[in-house]
Length: 317
Image (cartoon, rainbow, N blue to C red; front, top):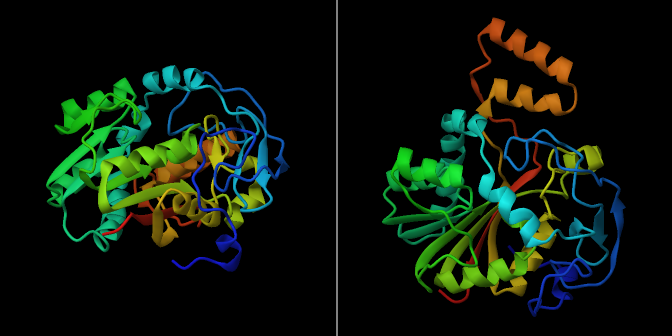
């Protein structure tokens, strides 16, 4: 994935520390107001199936240099850690078939660039569906870390996976060990996103791969919906564009190799229920119609082109 002329002018040195006063992606202090979306987190807390669209822990600012967007106030780690540890979602578990299908697609893309199916680490692996698919595809070692007690316990007890109830910065993991590290819907949640990329670089072997799955804030859908975009939710700290994600990776010694849209597979019922975040009454009516037509539990993979998967190589192969 070649650099654009504008990207080549962005400094390559990584940030010394993450701060809400500078752009997390490029380090510029040219942050300008972008969207008013401040709100409070509801009773459902931090779950992957939230319908609290247009709610955040601050307003969103945009970098005038690299297009990255982020909260104007980063919450403290203490504000987030306890909530993530308690996060749970039965809805997500019920969508296992679609999630596994989606993760097979991600793994197929990773395997184009990985010389062999070696050692893979999934950071923030939730209940472990990607790791279960990797194991079934013959990956030699599949490890996950997940702070949610509910999700990590499910992965261990129900799927028999090596998933530790830990977080990235404190997990006891061997350095230079993994061939691939996956961060699916994780980096945008981190107040220390730059430090996370450095930590992953320590865990990867030279030439290892990182695979990021991220909402694409530069997409047409995101621009159209603005503060009501379904990825504007509590605990999203960062709003990456393809350009800003590549910029951040390069500043930490990664070279982007591949980027594409990353649609998710869920049942028709699930997607219609998510629409309840906009029009609850209409959502329920549509679910009832889908049930009568016998399609409510059919798997659906609409590509709104507002999610991306980016694969990058760390250091020299």
